[in-house]
Length: 393
Image (cartoon, rainbow, N blue to C red):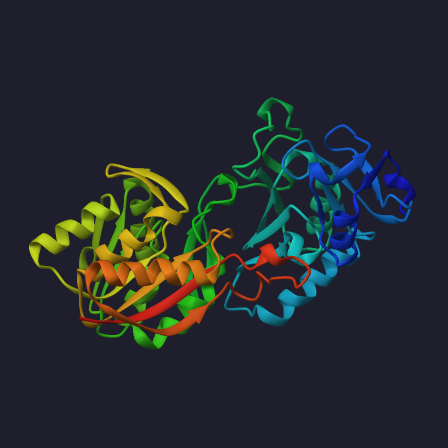
């Protein structure tokens, strides 16, 4: 037991005990038999027989306790060791600490060049911030550390006024400008001061890498494109035509800037500020076709065509994409909603094929890049699903 973390004792039921002994890092409120604490306070978790199962930070959200490693710095160094193995000098944007999957529940650390973004799932984890920021700065992994909070939508109990420290710079020297990071040598502009969504989703890096030989000569339609990194990589690797669709004109401006910083003339490419469903329907009505469509939607979004829910609407999205694909076209589908299993995801895609009366052949399947590991002790960690299908009309 770490005496510096001494606090109230929480007794858990036998079901929770079994999972905690397997390495699962959460205690749910309904599993607590006795004991409570204030959010952000250290607690000792014990079985009803008195055995110590771990120490963690108490919360009043949908997760009651997140168990922390006995030696935080040692655990962080173990995480860093993996990244030294799987990340080379051609990439300066990656995940250094992947929460529960690296043994630090609720804590994610992303490296963006010389800066780090520390994202916490709950304000109850704030007591860890000084030690995390100190480790990042003094180990030379970042010259500036930004803090942000990314609470789960299921957590209704978080009050922004109670958050301390507040989001923003919590260590070192900051920046207020776009910075250039590298993904396999490709330049991408990011904003580490803007929180968790800085301008690049690094978990899709290996998917973009696998696709590199397959862009050449293809007409590419990238939907829900955000800052257009898939579009950018396809253009660099020889796509014949690249159309980039996103509802936000502001992020499309950032996509154009990504093209420019890589020496590509944006006038040779198409940027469309539109709702994806409406854009697909417009292409269908005009008879436009493409060879490869990318579908990587947010789990939930609101557009001019209504509310998009990935669990309810993905098959409709797939059907719309298939209607603008030429025979033998490719469809790249992704979902980062952890509550959707690979089986359910494939079913959604298959229903989309049926709706559009096409046949689909799965030719590649991927999960997150290796700096986003999925721990065997944490089933929820395998969140990203990416499939590539060949479409036959």
